[in-house]
Amino acid sequence: MRTLVAVAAAALAGSVSGPAAADGFFLSAGLEADDESGQLVHASVGGDLSERTSWDFAAASSDTSADRSGLGSTSYHGAVRYDFGPVGLRVGLGGWEDEGLSSVQQWRAALDFGGDPWRFVLEAQGTARDFDPFDVDRTIIRHDGSEVDVNARADCAVDAPGLGARLGWFGDPWGFEISAMSYDYDDPTCDFDLPLLDLLRRTTREEFVQLADAITGRLALGIGSNLLAETSPLDSRVDLEASYFGAVRSYHVYLDHFEDAFIGTSADSLSAGIAFVLASGNEIELYAGATDGDDTGTIAFLGFVAFFGF
Image 1 (cartoon, helix red, strand yellow):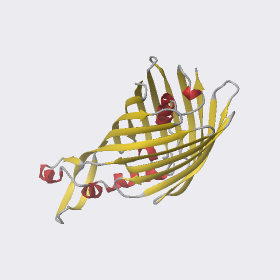
Image 2 (cartoon, rainbow, N blue to C red):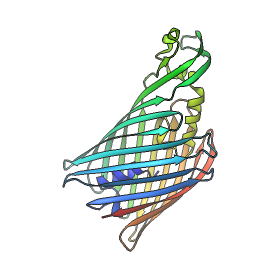
Image 3 (cartoon, rainbow, N blue to C red):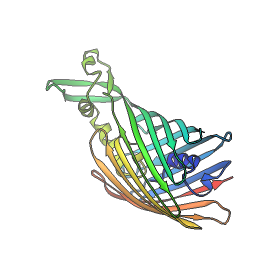
Image 4 (cartoon, rainbow, N blue to C red):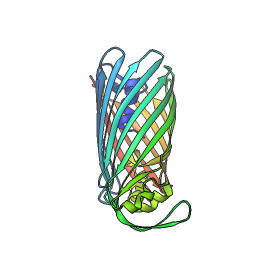
């Protein structure tokens, strides 16, 4: 999956070809649409602060409200990378808004090792998701089998630290990369407008899904859309990429697998792209693919990303 945060990170780490990897300053922007009237607009910028220090900032806005229960997301992420020589350190902060459902803050830190043709990256993430207040009117079955009647307004949050790794080989003319990320969710915490419900202030994941079934069910639909999978509450993900680099164009195949954290559904995405080096030395990539989700069926998508180096 070609994402703006990944593009910016790869460009500054020197693991992509074209103008995005050029010294100085880069700009990238793109559009994506799917066959359920969903749209995604994204852009990123970055450059050098010094010989060893670089920065990047990415932002994106997606809208699938026409056919996907009003799902939409606005995200941003900024990072700084310092090159120690054989090791690079990249740290960043970001977040996103799932319209009417939740807001998320996230930090990232990554260590990348090696140079041409091998690259290995260790990454850690910390995600804090704050759900918009919602009404509950149902009976909750607790982890010990007891039942609690809930008729109240809840304000809930959950933290999810994550660990992952990425291994890539970028030779001439072939390149391959595999990455994986897994998240370990803390027990969600909830505040209620009825003090008698303080016994549910810290819930298990199963209890929380009962409390917030409408919200978690809607968010779980996101992994079935290439436009929203990045910002969905993920339990884990695995990404594969194979590339062939020619003199004036390169070819890429992406395979991604996502697991939802709350409902337990999964989705697989397969796409392919071709990137052209323009006469100006800049680059544009065209791609198309499809995502198949347990609850969403198959959704086709297509898009482009343009890269400009200065």
